[in-house]
Length: 89
Image 1 (cartoon, rainbow, N blue to C red):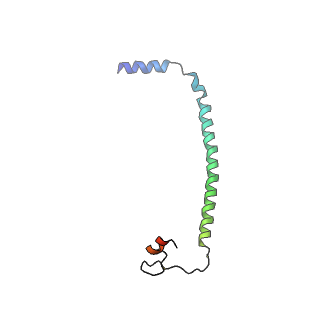
Image 2: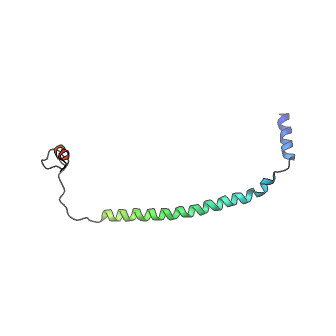
Image 3: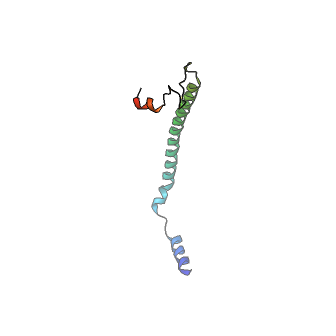
């Protein structure tokens, strides 16, 4: 334990590196850069939300009355019958 105490005492007496003087400015510059990048992400999120809303509204609009095809597997005119799919009609 004495060795650890001596090493910590030497470390406490050692002068601080000169690079520590500039560390505050570097940290604040990185924080500002991340905040600026986050502003761009908010714009992309707004565009995505608008596109989602437009898609939901467009999906709810009536497309017009159409005769739905029977998808019963044993029906004669089923578009999904194996014979119809193999022929390619």
